[in-house]
Length: 144
Length: 144
DNA sequence: CGATTTCCGACCGATCTAGTCGGGAATCAT
DNA sequence: ATGATTCCCGACTAGATCGGTCGGAAATCG
View (spheres, each protein chain N blue to C red):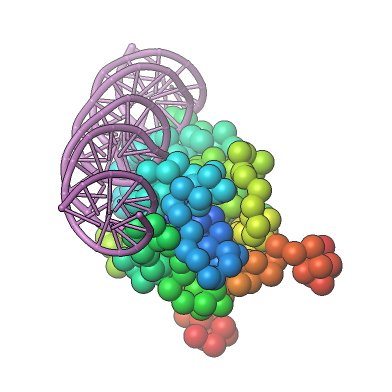
């Protein structure tokens, strides 16, 4: 029940890109080394992130990857959804063969509630928020 | 990223047991049929639930399963933790080889926050709450 | 004893995870 | 045009996990 390593790598790479100077793109190799991510695996990940519209790339010398929109407009939900193919869903696949017994509706409702809670939060936190959380004074501001 | 089918089955069985009359235990077969759960699979599940201290069992005629404590004192977190071996954790396995880069702390903090949120909620909802949620008037009370 | 019911370890096919491999295609400087 | 650089992309794989199944042993009761 942990987040997939692939999604974790994607989050690292996106965080790295969000925190990088916007004038020049970053190389896959750069991202892999800094983020501690297997190079060829990261290649795949960045590709799907790009196909999903979160990244833009350029080949050749001086090429690399950069965000396709400002960090504020990219939620970590967007990243996880692209990589894992759907968000974290506690509620099991909807309208399946679910039998009806006393308490069944209540169970589904309770799970759906929590599901909505976590997904809402994932959607609410942007890459910019992640960077903000990184600075020590932000920790102080939050009283940690 | 869905809840495991095994955990879903466990939740169904526990909900069933929480809603059953407390005078006699329920048979595995009964639970399997009512809950739409493969019998032999359910056997395993109930066994680990019992070893975890959530259930009590009795063999032979008149035997079966029943809750080991009142439904109010059993959180769905307890059930999922026993079955899936740990709760839903978005934050990756702690203190692993996590590299340090700009934003890494923020990323971990953001994930840990959401993690705490969902786990807190899972711990807050008991089987009794699940049963309450099942009745239509409870829905009205919640303004649904 | 024999019926009932839980207990328990071993096993199994399909799918998913976490990658690797090898080469192709675009871009750029010279 | 050539060659270096860098991204693009499909195929492949070892190992783990998922979702069960099977066969029987042990307890409990009439």
